[in-house]
Image (cartoon, rainbow, N blue to C red; front, top):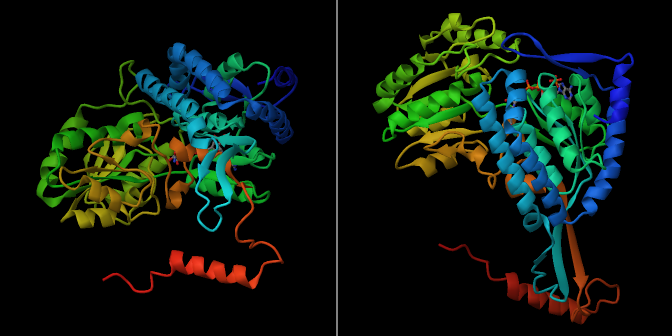
Length: 504
Ligand code: NDP
């Protein structure tokens, strides 16, 4: 927040509270920024972007590395804000922040190599040209983030957009505004004179205002339903969007899998962060030959897990109270349609906490299989072979992440699953590898954060063809001769005329 914004806040202005979901206590009070204020922030960001994009890649990398250092030294403080606003265990908040810092580091170091000007071959016909391509910043990137991973998730856009030379205006979820403020405040310590990274706070309307504020691209992470609204608002001004939306990720367990490792990973994938993970496990498909053994190991491990507010609890509360109704309705629908809860069940849904719930025999068209539950629940389904497992894994509108446990066929099965990312014999490992792109297909959205694709997402490709010497064949002139036409035909025939029969 700028000093002007703070001064205005002390006058009569609308505010909202962020609450601790464990206790209901107020963690902080934040301004609801109006559309005019959002527009003003974006206007300031345009000026800052002109300065920031004028720095060299190395200068930007130095400043981003300084920022990373400040955040790393205060990681306990950051984890505390995340813990207070989301309710997740402090250690999980630290893990989230640590992974995000690794991405800041990677984006800062790699931007020059990925985006800087590179020569490409001009080809034989255009041999007199020097051809280069580079990736230039778009200007100001609007980032709208969710509450479930309030550091890691938006940072996948913020760090990559900044490293590519853009300014950023970030609207955090109304449940985690303090985390957003913390990130922008630490950046301002490193870059005090230019508002390169600002935060605007408020409810959904503030996010909608950001879509219409003149940003050069909008990076949205949140539910599919809101993603559609964001896209519609951005369409009014032809503002491009990245949509990182929900998921319904599946785990495939093959007959030769390490069942102990698979059960351990699937349980963590389903229940960590109380199941409120876009790439969390919501469905498991297990080969008939190992189904009983896998299920028994999964249930045994899950029995020891409880969600409560004790200091060393591994599962925290449901951050957004309205989600409790969704989780309960999915469990009930599964049971009404012939499913069984082998652990947990409808009574697992309390006032703030949901206990781990494992459902079996659930029909594939039930909401527990088709819709994002976002709670510590999972369906386990027996399949006769891995072809059936792949078909069922691909049987929802979503396509974000997935997991395969198999000794012999891991890569083959991974390739056949229609999802943006797959972990083989691990859980969500792709998210921690900065060089890998992160994003989905179908209702999980489009566009990529992380990796070289994530850097390019916040740029436009700039192609330059520079004449090195006069062409032997003058083609782009009305003075083109019949001789030049003939020579071109000969060259093209020589280059491309051979593929007239199909190879047997
Ligand atoms: P929401 O879609 O409810 O909200 C996401 C963000 O959009 C929030 O900042 C929200 O503000 C804002 N918003 C709400 N309405 C509008 C609007 N009309 N125009 C613009 N912005 C708006 O998602 P959640 O915060 O509940 O996050 C959970 C969802 O995020 C899950 O579906 C999860 O799968 C997904 N997700 C996807 C990830 C991915 O990488 N694919 C990663 C993490 C989460 P406010 O909070 O103030 O309403």
